[in-house]
Image 1 (cartoon, rainbow, N blue to C red):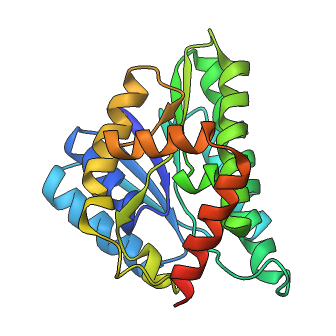
Image 2: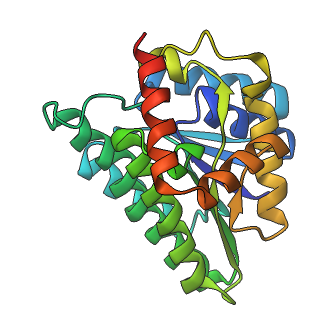
Length: 255
């Protein structure tokens, strides 16, 4: 049975990935700060899907935890077939605010992605197969503060890693979802209650389409046609227009 390692696999998109893969017969390695949540999810999936679930309590803002997880990924006796770098959190603090929150965000969503993806790439290349999926965001194409900057980095980094691993048997893909119905926004203090229903995507739909795109060899995945169009417009629109839209979106979140 193949094994997938998912960071932030107890809630939201990460949990949707875990649920989808468990149903497909994958064994799971789940890493999160939420030890109680890890144990609860592991018990549920083992009972329902009859798979093995390994839990690793991990704080990705702590470099020693990230390096320990990287060692697990490179353990040749317990190979990881699919790495999903999903863990993250909303960052809508002012760029003039204290740097602490921004530093933590970059550790969790940039440095951890860099270290874990590198570990997976080395291990998978030696075996000649495997896949790495990094969760970015449609915010990568706009300019809503440091979150956009971080997710733009994740996207470009993933494309660069895909270039390096071309022909190795290892697939690499960045996922750029739009607004997904999870607790992500409320946890981050983002006011999104006024958004119309049609902009939202269900987490299960995101996971299903992302895994389908990964299997098809895509490097960038944007679930649903409407969000694919939005991201395409974000790439081709004048930067002045993108900044205007970003200011309006930021203002609407603060009202």
